View 1: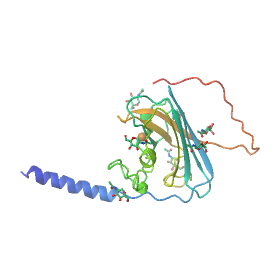
View 2 (view 1 turned 90 degrees about the horizontal axis):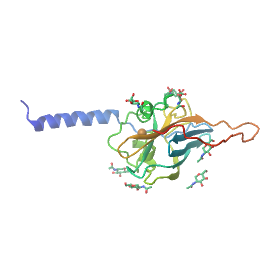
View 3 (view 1 turned 180 degrees about the vertical axis):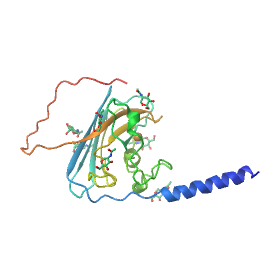
View 4 (view 1 turned 45 degrees about the vertical axis):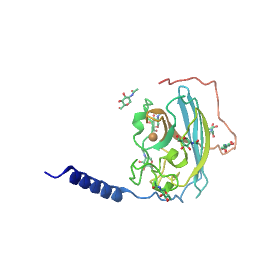
Length: 197
Ligand SMILES: *[C@@H]1O[C@H](CO)[C@@H](O)[C@H](O)[C@H]1NC(C)=O
Ligand SMILES: *[C@@H]1O[C@H](CO)[C@@H](O)[C@H](O)[C@H]1NC(C)=O
Ligand SMILES: *[C@@H]1O[C@H](CO)[C@@H](O)[C@H](O)[C@H]1NC(C)=O
Ligand SMILES: *[C@@H]1O[C@H](CO)[C@@H](O)[C@H](O)[C@H]1NC(C)=O
Ligand SMILES: *[C@@H]1O[C@H](CO)[C@@H](O)[C@H](O)[C@H]1NC(C)=O
Ligand SMILES: *[C@@H]1O[C@H](CO)[C@@H](O)[C@H](O)[C@H]1NC(C)=O
Ligand SMILES: *[C@@H]1O[C@H](CO)[C@@H](O)[C@H](O)[C@H]1NC(C)=O
Ligand SMILES: [Cu+2]
């Protein structure tokens, strides 16, 4: 019967080997298209946008504008998840984080070495939300607006969690296509809350 210490040492070395094999740094993206995506956050009191814009060959600039977060269980993390939101809106269906390099969630993202973080771990790289609202702008060099890049997020989703990891809100990114005439044909009617869970 091996001693508990021996078993622990064996488990640790297997774990370290596994980590070393699957942990690959994210590749800085250089092939972005000129594109704009917007995710409309609409989950009861939690309202806002997570918008992402890139110029050709430039890193993606995010504008995260969210309000109505709860007064408990901060900080709130936010990520790009690996699947879109299912038609029924159940955030569980968005799966895990966008992680094309197989880094997994552990250890936590090191904010000073963003290439070592999961591509989809936006709050790990750019800061979680500690308040009931936020207006964050940041640029991320590891997500892509090019569908041929493994870090493409244009058909995925934006998810906000609380400190218990519960999923408070989720939204699909959809491409914003500017009209060739230059006219802004956005139509805004009175909003109604459609989802209260
Ligand atoms: C996000 O994009 C949508 C769609 O273009 C726009 O209506 C909204 O004002 C934008 N919000 C922010 C905070 O940029
Ligand atoms: C999100 O996008 C997917 C794929 O286009 C679609 O099937 C789904 O209905 C959308 N979810 C919501 C809540 O609109
Ligand atoms: C959402 O999906 C998960 C996993 O399929 C399920 O356990 C949960 O009950 C669903 N939530 C709602 C509100 O339907
Ligand atoms: C985080 O990354 C920095 C820069 O590479 C490094 O100096 C530091 O040791 C890292 N911290 C941890 C906890 O890995
Ligand atoms: C949010 O709080 C965490 C600790 O809970 C802190 O490390 C972080 O700097 C805070 N972020 C902001 C934007 O204040
Ligand atoms: C973030 O970007 C938006 C759109 O470009 C701008 O209107 C807003 O003033 C910026 N906010 C901050 C805090 O820089
Ligand atoms: C998103 O689009 C990319 C490029 O077309 C594709 O490879 C990927 O499978 C799609 N992801 C999902 C979840 O549909
Ligand atoms: Cu998440």
